[in-house]
Length: 125
Image 1 (cartoon, helix red, strand yellow):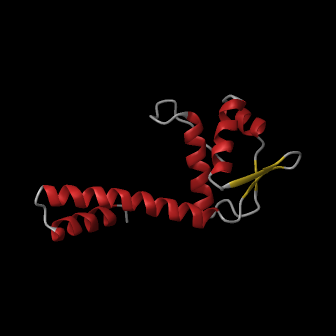
Image 2 (tube, one colour):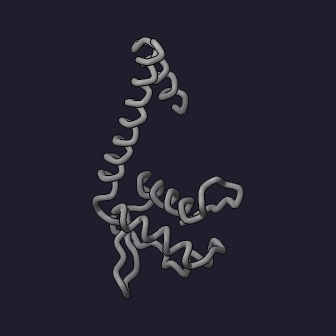
Image 3 (tube, rainbow, N blue to C red):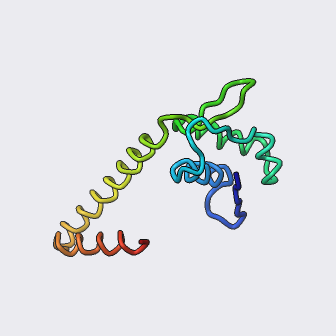
């Protein structure tokens, strides 16, 4: 498992760790039941404090991505993909709701907003 930390990023280091592990889980690189490195091992390999990794693991556990058992370690949870996708959909809905409100108050047509959404969606494909 390779985690790349950028000291120039706007995100705190623990969030960089969290987002990269989530991405590995969502892409299938890490599967349900896979062990992830111990906090000390990961901290040593990426040259950060154990407390920083602990914060990342706590966030991952709170969000349902990993399960940690004392004496056994941390493992990828079974129900993480569905939870993550639901959360991302909720965030997208909030942004779309804001865009719709801006469109209505600025007299931007639904067709134009739909066209912009399609353009942005296809931009990364």
